[in-house]
Image (cartoon, rainbow over the protein chains, first blue to last red):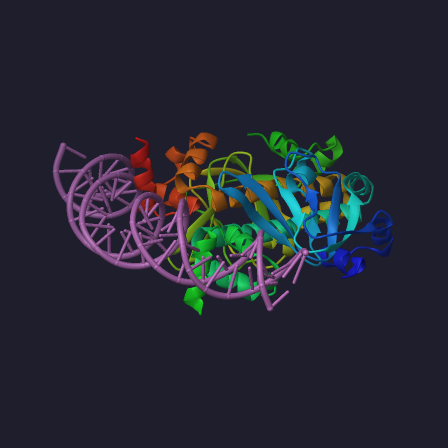
Amino acid sequence: MEIDEILEHFHPLPPQSREALKARISEVRYPKGHMLMRTGRVEKMLYFIRSGIVRAYSDADRGDVTFWFGKEGDVVVSMKSYVSGQPGYEHIETLEACELYQMRAQDLEELFANDIHIANWGRKLIGQELIKTEERLISMQFKTAQERYLDLMSATPDLLHRVQLCHIASFLGITQVSLSRIRADIR
Amino acid sequence: MEIDEILEHFHPLPPQSREALKARISEVRYPKGHMLMRTGRVEKMLYFIRSGIVRAYSDADRGDVTFWFGKEGDVVVSMKSYVSGQPGYEHIETLEACELYQMRAQDLEELFANDIHIANWGRKLIGQELIKTEERLISMQFKTAQERYLDLMSATPDLLHRVQLCHIASFLGITQVSLSRIRADIR
DNA sequence: CAAAAAATTTTACAAATGATAAAAAACAAA
DNA sequence: TTTGTTTTTTATCATTTGTAAAATTTTTTG
């Protein structure tokens, strides 16, 4: 996925502003298993995914909890870090070899302060992330695990072939064993 | 809670921009049970809560699902509507008599387009909402209902006295019966 | 205050999910 | 292929949560 397409997808940008963004973006590749971000750090970079899949997860008593998958076209930020400048609570790792567009968070801050189109573009970007998160929260609250699994299958069917089931289970808020039962029931 | 305090809380604003915002804000009161927003509409207004409590909820098979409480100082928007201009998926109603600061969404859009400080203020506002939502999502995924109840009690203890338990239960993602059991266990 | 309505708790039973261990299947490296 | 490792499934039992109905408490209304 090309960078122009990704940037435009969040919100239209005047050519000049888009070029200002692109001038601060470079390309980078990481192998599977690379840690893009770590809990407790104030992250200096953010990424847009050109290809590949990543996951964000938090540490918990019973192992880690995957709460987000990022795929082609998605933005990768440590939200807490990005929004408040405070240490983030998530690890983010690549689940496949990834091609990423990278940008320094500080460069983006400077653009926000000086270019109103980019400031509004950033506002829309966060807004879209919020909607997605809110919709997931609602579905966690009132749908059964089986419904959530079926939703995920119809929304991003390829995810199941590209990601381990233990991560899918964690993402759905259930154990891997429970996910196996659900899959058996559906068959 | 005064409007200046509320506005500044999200992000500092130069006096000129703050006055521009305030010039478009008026005050309004509604009794308990008033519907501020409705599913399926593109909402034209947004609010800041001077006093009182409101809840946002979605329709579901088994009744409604409360997924957000707003209290003094919080912003009240139909997120989908506000972010994307598309019909929202939530109802929002007052749970107490409320004093609100109100503003036309279109006025805010115009300020976003013309005042970079307000655009960045709006970006920070949405970002803070995103963090809160993401933290709730994570706690839904890896905490037990009892832990979530205890968290809520320590975070906003007054909520329990001001809001019906059926709404608290729904907010926690459990039934009212289950919440009753948890409360009995704690005693 | 008394009656009615609403909200909350309790009880009993059913269904879903979790924990653990072990077996089966899929995958990777030599 | 063969071996060894990882991933997924299956089976068992304990725990949690849901559903429905009744009992209790609290609030509202006359």
